[in-house]
Image (cartoon, rainbow, N blue to C red):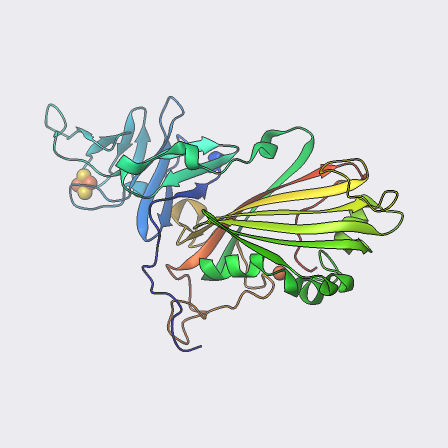
Length: 335
Ligand code: FES
Ligand SMILES: [Fe+2]
């Protein structure tokens, strides 16, 4: 494809994005991230509060991620100016106090359900109640797992792929797909905050993945349900339930059902930098099923040359509940 689908700067800023796992942000080592093209430094105060600041010293623009975390802020290691957790300058060497007009931008952060969320819009519009819940992430009845992928494609194409259940019987026949799934159609429902895609499979053999962890004695009723909360949160709910009597679907979590929930946080331009010892400390996902690589927001020939600001990063946390025996895995890629 020779033309970009979306311009590089097609970012929706008035939204919450998953920026890191809470354990990645420490009071010892600054974490550098680039989100929607903004360079950030993340760290914790001595009190444990996670902080995200613009990664650019207000003095001569040195990266604060190369600086030193101190009890009350982070010190730039170029000329020693220190910034507090609110981004204000609190100390200038050889001067009695910081400068009241010298500051770097602070980005609101919220830790919730095991994710660290960042608000990239204007501070006046920040609203933590708009963070999508994931209550299962700390429910002991569910087996948690988490991961990180860097996808060499625009984040919108990741959503396109995850919404697309039609490819499962053909690309993933040995894991989450099954040949009989091709006989069922998808219901698509527009929502105020995004779109919902549902596909139900009635009286079919379980997929190999669900069969391996559910050990169903016969056919199942199964489902893939996906909700894209625009712009960057994607929730997948899938499961298989043993058919009972006339084939009534058991409620979610009912006995003899296998149920998996995965929350994907896709964020264009979230890159791991200095603290991960390289441009991308995560697992490159060139093999992530059929996401078309290199066809978005980049010139031809650039696809394999490195990380592009519009590439997607997925922080994903999954849970598998149930009741069928065997510790499940959420890794549904072909092996
Ligand atoms: S550039 Fe940061 S103190 Fe001078
Ligand atoms: Fe796929």
